[in-house]
Image 1 (cartoon, rainbow, N blue to C red):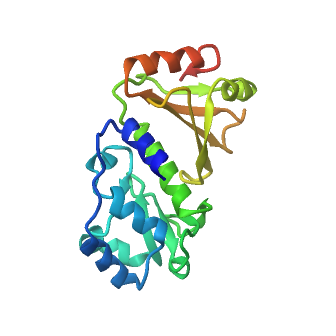
Image 2 (cartoon, rainbow, N blue to C red):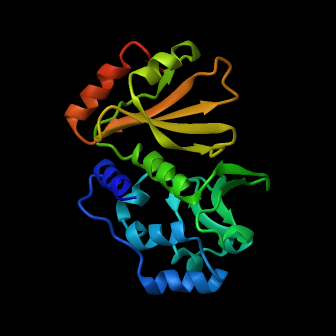
Amino acid sequence: MPEFWDLIKTLFAVSRLHGCTSEEVNALKQRFGQIPQAVEEFYLTAGRTKEFQDGQDKFILPEHYKNYSWLEQVDGLVLLEENQGCCEAYIKKEDLALPDPPVYVSWEDGEAALCAASASGFLMAALAYEAAFTFEYAPEDFYYVDGEDIEEFKSRLKQYPFKMQRWLCDTEITFYSNDPCNLVAALYSESIEDDGLQLVYGAVTKEAYIKLERALEGVCGSF
């Protein structure tokens, strides 16, 4: 994932990534017996990058298993907790032997659904989503693309190959850009009547933000 890590460093405006220690990861492996290779690589490469925790939600790290008793109630390895504790993304215990297993989301009522087909894909999408809430250059309002304008919206931007499903109940989150320094997280909800997209977007630099604003002109409005 070298190219992806370069993108993430750009979006979070950091010059280097900070990983968990081998001791921390080994302690988690002892707790579960084993953890997926994709998750271990994430922890060791970038798990302790503090800027990752500046977004909307909380990444769960090996150290948190010493402090958060609620993690013991989840039948698997938790990767991300929603900011109000409404849901969490996790890997089922029976899938922990797989190198890159699917990730599920579980809500307060106990219902669970597939969030991403692979742990690596989930981590890419989750990091991009959290980055979207940290940009120095971002609109003050939330913006929305009507259903009839979605194809035009997509034609103006590059779509990234990762996504999150069902993170916020019925919401699918896809990602778009027209510069490495900007990003759009597009949230589609089945409960929205006209099949539109809610946008969370911004940029690291003023130039990249202006470039993105020009691309969005005429296809989205504030609400």
